[in-house]
Image 1: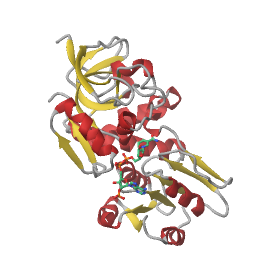
Image 2: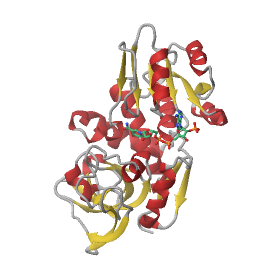
Image 3: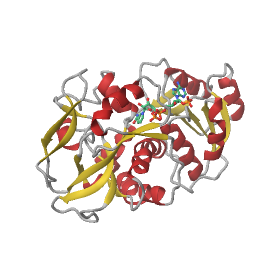
Image 4: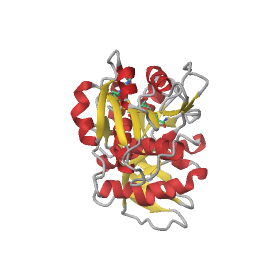
Length: 340
Ligand SMILES: NC(=O)c1ccc[n+]([C@@H]2O[C@H](COP(=O)([O-])OP(=O)(O)OC[C@H]3O[C@@H](n4cnc5c(N)ncnc54)[C@H](OP(=O)(O)O)[C@@H]3O)[C@@H](O)[C@H]2O)c1
């Protein structure tokens, strides 16, 4: 193996990416080295590169690396790794964001990435792009709904209780709808009116245009909701969900936090859902996700993937692609192959 490979480094806060040759890392005990073939740019990455968001301190030791998710082929196994072998096609999540000290080894915006073997899933013959397109946002939705709201695993619902997904047009929202349907809920969503047909196909029983002036009244007539989730996370959505919980109060999950004035009888559940599997306290969820549920979803095509555009140019294309995601002009996800 070559001793050097390419990485898209953030040289300093607010600086553009610098694609440079860096030494290859080798896996320690319980780790694997993966040749990364797919990066899907997440809003989080774009906010960290361009919006001054530090990702909980990950970007403190510059030069730093973005990205905590990738898909590729295992090149090396560390001591004690079982159930995985060199040559396996995998999708994986790393500690690059939750542990800044591991950022340069585990940031996925590079060609060869170290990952803890516990957060690696085999994908068989599923395309790398499809695997990254689904993993990160689906995991976000499922962690929020299953771990933090307690909606239950697929097949455990009674088909009658109702769940509400606000902002179902994005990746997290789309996968939340499909997961809730698979658990066994009636799912009401808000999305753009142009998205209604796709929402119905994914299993939504009703689609309300979130821009309609009477959106909350329409939703109130369709409720009450046992579970409420905003996958856009904006203050308008948070206030809307809080209002739908009145007069008795209750809780909702949100992908974003922020200072939002909410009634005292409402609890907002906001966490780094996408990183939940990195926490040892969620080891049961982690084992289920990487060993059982995610491989099944990918192999059996249990979710309809969101729209994506493959961007050519390899790591050098990540700067412009991030700017396009950050400015909000992209629909769906942008995917880059770091080996190009
Ligand atoms: N807490 C976490 O762990 C976590 C994890 C992942 C993502 N996030 C956050 O979750 C958000 C969504 O991520 P994503 O990957 O799903 O993004 P995405 O796929 O880029 O979704 C963007 C889409 O969401 C819809 N949308 C945007 N603003 C909206 C609003 N104000 N109200 C309702 N819908 C709106 C739009 O669809 P239409 O135009 O069709 O309506 C837009 O195309 C981002 O802010 C991201 O940073 C948080």
